[in-house]
Amino acid sequence: MRHFHSGHHHCRTARSEHEDGLSGGRGLRGGRGGGGGGRVFGHGGLRFVLLQLIADKPAHGYELIKAIEDRLGGSYAPSPGVVYPTLTLLEELGYLSVETADNGGRKRYSITPSGHEFLAANRETADAMMARMNGGVDGAGPRGGRPPQVTRAIENLKLAMRMRLSGPALTEQQAHEFAAVLDSAAQQLERI
Image 1 (cartoon, rainbow, N blue to C red):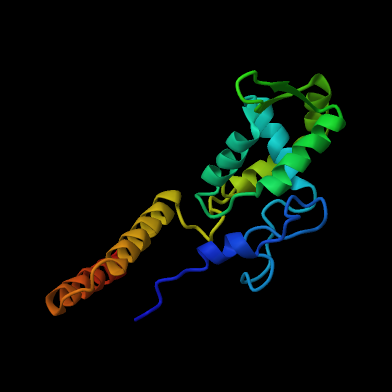
Image 2: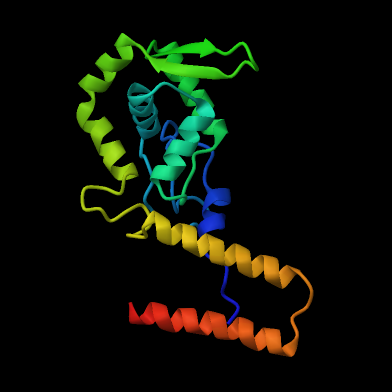
């Protein structure tokens, strides 16, 4: 069986650079050959998510990207090329204020009173975007119900396999042991 590669990595590299919805791009599983519909945020949705996250806690752009990726169980992270222009747009609209740190120039974003008003006026949309990012009201999750700890464990296993297989060639005995571990894991998973 040589089917170790999932669509996870492909999902990140094949997505559109306009996935914030401002230009109608795709999100998770969208884009070229990504496996069918379903944008993560939809049209303009990223701006609501960013505003809500910043309303909860002022943050740097990188922290916002990481927060979105964490909430989606590692299955998706918006690219900096989408997040930073959206933050700039929100700043230009008067919804965010920016503080630049003296030690390296990183920008920290805070929501303004106008930003709070915009969120309040669009509460239903903002809540829907946050619910989608947090797995939806039915708890199905962004990857068809895959909990974040399962995604993490799968990635750990794939990394361990790649590291071992990229090292010295397996002996006949090691190859049998390697296959036995994988077969055993598969059998245990079938019983869950």
